[in-house]
View 1 (tube, helix red, strand yellow):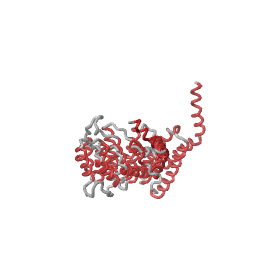
View 2 (cartoon, rainbow, N blue to C red; view 1 turned 90 degrees about the vertical axis):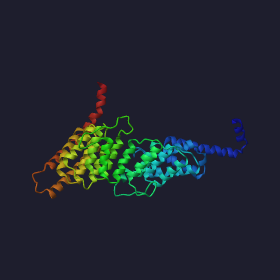
View 3 (cartoon, one colour; view 1 turned 135 degrees about the vertical axis):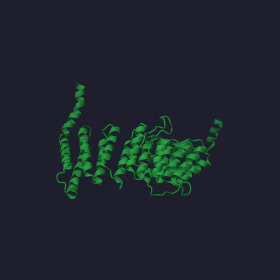
View 4 (cartoon, rainbow, N blue to C red; view 1 turned 60 degrees about the horizontal axis):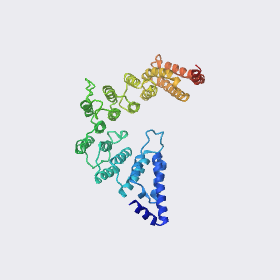
Length: 429
């Protein structure tokens, strides 16, 4: 068979053989770009093949690698390509795949569904589901979790006053019921058990339906978390329903969506303590961001200090300066001057203790923030608190903080020289 194939190839005109070799080289270059992961080069090479109508020479394996390479970077600093552009390129490739009848795997479809979720393209999500059914692909847990995520929507969109286009039909059923239909019918039909991610999305669907009492009931019955009673740990570490950091994020997002900041923090603390989960920094920042933007939430200095102490204990201290700056922003925006004074006592102490670990640029930025906040406090004391002339503790503390930072700024060059000389001294010893 191989010998006959070679004879057939030799019988072809030289121009035809050269044409096939040229296309192969183009495909090889595309494969190299996919391996490197440069999205700009990948898109450029693919569009070149598309314009020349040479897509038929791309193998199924290369198509799969091509699609999976089109993913958002984990860090915004690693890629300056916006997610909508990545998604539109992936969708273009998917349509080419359908036209050429190339068989994709269920994992490829999962990846496309995730991109659909990121850009909120429900129409394309429907096309992917139709492709899965038409090609009789076996859905897995990741596939159904992606479908559930599309029903609920992105966390940034999770507001009770918004309505979205329906994913599968134009029914007016609740988001919770649609998620339960996927879990109890579709997943059960294929013998797939839901995991923690599935129930995280179910919790968010309850929040999107604006039913806070059901949210409390869900956390109590599913995770055994009771704010006014004894907590009961229901799952072991090796259980697929064991909560994760994504669960903590869902709890904070859900309660903040219904403007219940205090319960968001209370359940975050209770759930992370019961299941021994470390609260990620982005979850803390999201909680404080909601607290700062909420119109109905009025934080007391006890609550704010409690949040700060909890964050401090979970991050071993050093990153707490950033989170404390966020707390100060909340107190300033809501005119809690005395509360901000108490926070500044701890903020100045942390700044002083961690100066040796900071760069000059960061020290100066915090100095500018402190100076700006001092002016705001002076203005508000003069306009709103004229009757309390003897209560200038906040002003005195801020002056002390400014003097401390100015002292460190003036001695910064000398301290930097000492730190640079330290490795040499250690080597000499």
